[in-house]
Amino acid sequence: MRRSISAIMLAVVMSLLLANIAGQAIPATDALCFAHGVYNMQAISQGDNLYILWEHDTVANNGQGDHYILFKRSTDNGKTFGETTSLYHSSPLCTAYPHMAVEGSNVYVMWEGGDGNVLFKASNDDGTSFGSTIPLGKGILGSAGTAGYIADGGKVLASGNRAYVVWNDDQFDIILRKSDDGGKRFGDPVNISKNVAESINPRIAISSDDVYVVWLEDMECAFQSEPVCSSKALFAKSDDSGRSFGDPVPLDKLIGSSLSMPRLFSVAADGTMFISCGRKKTTISIFPQVATAARHLAAR
Image 1 (cartoon, rainbow, N blue to C red):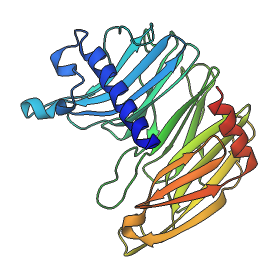
Image 2: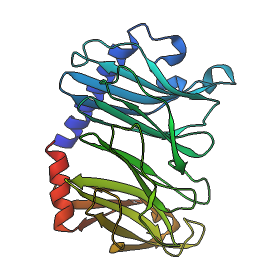
Image 3: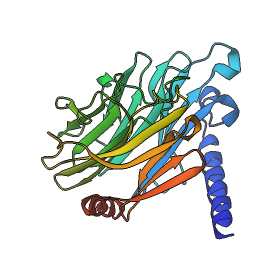
């Protein structure tokens, strides 16, 4: 009953938030209306600031359509909002799975562009303005089609003036790049998975100079194309702020039908990792250092 009440309250809050934003003279093509194709809405609050990010596809309106990644900011705890900012615009369905991270005055956004590149933008003034778009490398952040399932192929994380971006590239390796100057420049890409096997769905946590990454590795089923899928969870750690990583360490192995390919991968504040496989949810207690990093992030 408590869970149901919480779900209802969350739905009411989001409805009020959407109504508040939509009522503020947003152009019709940018309105937050689910019938117009709004996807992957995210909200992050920090102090009095509330940041909203979403995708909007207009193809349902005119048969042609455009695709946007849109951003909006409130500086008074959601009472009023500024203008809508378009961070990316392309032909229909040519962007995928944007992600946002916020710390201090820095707002970081990453997404997949229509050319298959992972793209990044940074604001260093609380979302008032954004710098130029930075291509980080090839990647697949959304679904890989009928040959596979990628629930969420990348993440961006903020730590002080650093920005960390991790994703699975078009060769299904787990790649990390880091910026030390607020997202203006990035270091060379680091291959974390170090394996010929196909890797997807990375997650990242940090604590001081330690960087932790967990992901899923496909072992035998070529992402659902075989009758029986077998995959495993892997973990790797960097103790030099992400410049290099140790060898991947296996955490757990999952075996099931093609419908049981892991789709959700998260690390809770108590250091517990959750993997959802179809209707089955597997819970794994992982290394103490991951728990420490997760608690550090949750407390921020």
